Image (tube, rainbow over all chains, first blue to last red; front, side, top):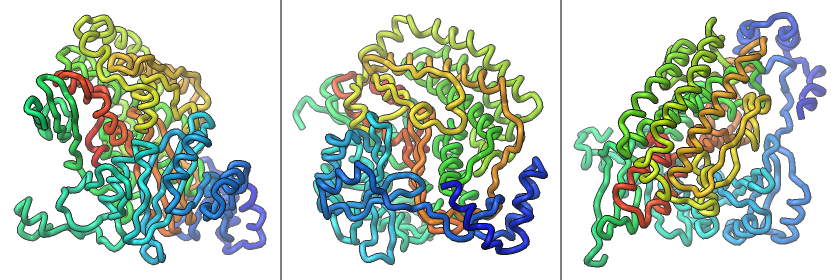
Length: 223
Length: 364
């Protein structure tokens, strides 16, 4: 991937700045001149001929594992891709629990490192629930994603990886996504009576549950 | 609830919960038959703050999660953003990062050892541990001006060159430290009270540890030989020789032994690293305005307490679209219930201590 950006670059040659900065690494040991040219430079101010045409960081993923997965689950695999060489599978929400069990037992992804969510309010299904898996046997990571609309439930994976318990509670706490089959789904970091889900994009950074703050902390302004 | 059962509340203000952790214990006499951790007292909405700061502005915030191992949290964040930007820190920066991070591991383990021993009733190790920790904090202070929330690294490399006597200071510390570990061990390893209070207490089997996502010394003490420094080397770890200590039974005593050995290994890494710090620039080719190309990355490093992971989503602007932090303390604490069942109330403090949590990181 490292070579890729370089080839398309020279013809592009946007401003006088690029050639100047590309000579820099040779001439000076200090990082200062490179920095000085940076603010004026476009998005990615990496000095040696930075990629103006979009670098291809996301590529479709198609290896033996994906083929195996596709034969087993067919249409439940919505997308298989790589981003910065990290494998990502987007799968059908309804079959998440079954897929999780398969990945743990057949593909040896025995540890769930991390479970979280991302809010994309403009999308039809606004939430991504993201699971980062790790396999001790293969020393590999895999990211599993499902899409969920506002009121849609996501199957819980607590039965597959008990560590998901608190992590799903945290996602529920911060995004209001509910997990079906979770043994004890309640808020974990915020107070139980708190209204609103802070990590949703429509929840402003200064927003608070003012009623709760007034009532429990005795702060009149609620902030 | 049966007539013999009693529910008591421990914390959130309690000297041996290491912060504002509240534990509801269900007891049958002196024996714990169930527990529930209630957390969130220190929740500051770090992940929300991240979405409203630029990539560089957010870097100091990660120091305030695990505030006794700020250098490690900072390294994880900087490397994650570097991955997102598809840049690399220059070799000199990577080696200095490695040295500081290993010193931080020793400092974090020393704080753990001192407080853990204090919880169980051994007062002396605390003073010894703080004496050595002070030396490390002095190195940090000389390097970047701060002792705890250091913000030692920058995205793309380092802001500060190593000061003139940096190698000498690190070397002197490492040389002295060998005999200091022997002092701690003389106080504890064969101490009958220490052994009695830790052996067979809070056993976590390897399959349980993996199921609960436990990482770091707690996982290794259960017999799983897994360390991200070896499994997916970052910074300059691929250049150094070191061992990964593992335990056999996964009890509190094993976790103690594993962390003691880890300090020795960290010392060895530091000694190898100062021998040959490469020259050259300390800052990679990153600009002042960071706009990572759209996409996402998950990057994890081996912090003193376990795997600290950063999941960062970029939408191509100067501010991250989403930052999620996988804090080792939070995940490891979840195994507490499994470890504490069947033990006495007095063992609860031993088990809280042995997991090595920092509530700033649990609650974020």
